Figure (tube, one colour):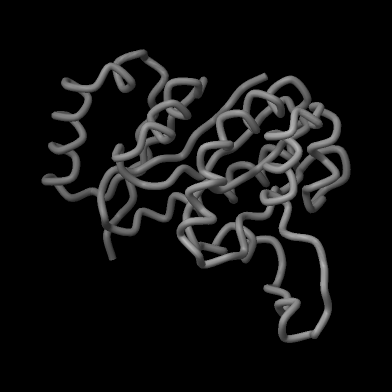
Length: 194
C-alpha cells in the first residue's frame, strides 16, 4: 500500500537504519498494520542486528542450508514464481501479522549483490499489494539507477541529514536539481552530530 524509504546522500553516518527500525517497530506496536522492513545496503547487517543476534554462518556450523531471505526471494521473483503472499515465507517475523524483516544478502561478494540489487524494485512491487507499509533502508547516494527507481516509487522519502549547514545546503541544492525530491513526499529527519 505505501512504501516509506529512508535515504541519505552524504557519506556521514546519519542513523537512518536505526531510525527506520525504531519508527517501523513503533508503528507495528501502535497500529494494526502489516509491515515489511528491508535493507538494500551492501554487506551491512545493521537492520538485522536491531531485531536479533547474528547467527553463526553455515560454514562455521558445517551445515548446508538455504540462502538468506533476499537471495531466495530474488530467485522466486526472477523465475516469476512469487506471489505477494509468498514473501512472508522468506522473512523473519518480529510481531506476528504486524512486523516482518526480510534479511539482507549474507554474502560479501559484490557481484552477488549486483545481481540482487536489480530485483529490489520488483520485490517492492510484489510486496506492496500484500503489506500495508513497507519500510526500505535504501543505500546512500544517487549513483545507481536502482536507487533512483526505488525513490521514484516511494510514497514517502525520509531524508536523513546531520545538522551540519554544509550537509543541509547540499540537500537544498539536490532538491533544486532532482525531480525526485520535488514531489512533496519528502520529510527531513535531522540528527545531531555527536
